[in-house]
Amino acid sequence: MMNKLIAGSVPYLPKKIVWQFSKRYVAGETIDDALNIVQDLVDKGMRVTVDLLGEFISDLRQAEENTRTYLQMMERFSAKGVRASYSLKPTSFGLLLNAEACYQNIRSLVQKAAAIHSFVRIDMEDSSCTEIELRLYKRLHNEFPNHVAIVLQAYLKRTLQDIQNLTTDSSAPETINIRLCKGIYVESEKIAYKGYEEVRRHFLEDLEFMFKHNLFAAIATHDKYLVDCAIQLIEKLNVPHNRFEFQMLYGVTPLLRDELVAAGYPMRIYVPFGKDWFAYCTRRLKENPKIASDVVKALFVRQ
Image (cartoon, rainbow, N blue to C red; front, side, top):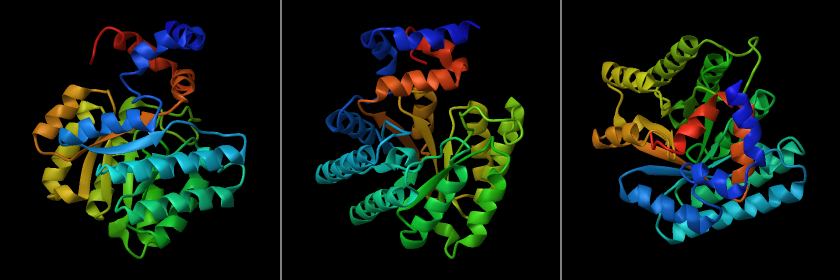
C-alpha cells in the first residue's frame, strides 16, 4: 500500500524534486548530455548502449522525429569517435500505428548503424508487442545479421521456445544477439512466471541454451545470484569472452558493475536520455509500484 501511495504521488511532485533521484539513472535531456556520460563510461572500460526515451506514440510524425534524432545521435557519436550501440522501442517508431512505416524507420537506423560499424537493439515491450517485434527483428536480421539485436524476457513462458525458433530459423545463428532480462511489465500468470525463484530458474535455463548454441548472450541483470550463476555457467561451458557480456542500467548497482569490470568481464551500460524522462520515470513507477521504496532509498543511499 505504501509503495502504491508513493508511486501515485510522484507524478504530482515538482520536476526538480523528481529529478533529484532520476538524474542517477537518466543521462539528461540532450544528445550532448548523453555523449558526456557515454564518454566517461567508455573511458572507464565499459561498453554502452544509448536509448532515447519515449514509447507508445500517437502520431507518425513523432516516429519520424524520433528517427531523425537517432540518426543525428549516431552521426554525433561516430564523429566524436565514441563507440556505442543504440537501443530503441518499436512503439516509439509507429509499431502500433503502421507496422510497415515502423519497419522502414528502424531499417534506416540499422542501415546507418551498419555504416558506422555499430548495431541497433530492438527492446522488448509488453506482451501485446512480443510477436510483432520478433517478426520485425527477423526481417531486419535477414538483411543486416551483424547489425541488429533483440531483447527477450525470461519471465514469459514462451521465451525458451522463441530462442529455439530464432536458432533454427536463422541461416547464421552465430549472429543472433539476445539481451536476456527478467522482465518488468505486469503480465497475466497465464503467460508469465510469477514466482521470484521461478523466474530466476528460467532465466538460467534460457541462458544455458544460448551458451550451448553459440548465440551471443547479453546478460542483463543486477541480481548478484544470477550474475554468480552466469559466471559458473561461463566457466563450466568454457564460453569465450567474445560470446557474451553483462549489461546493467546506468546508475544501478555500480559496485557490482565495477567488480565485474575489474574482474575482466565485458560490461555494457544501458544509458537512457531524453525530454521524456519525467514520463518515463512516473510510468515505470505506475507499472511496477514495488520499486517505489527503491526510489526513496535512492534519494539517500547510492546503492
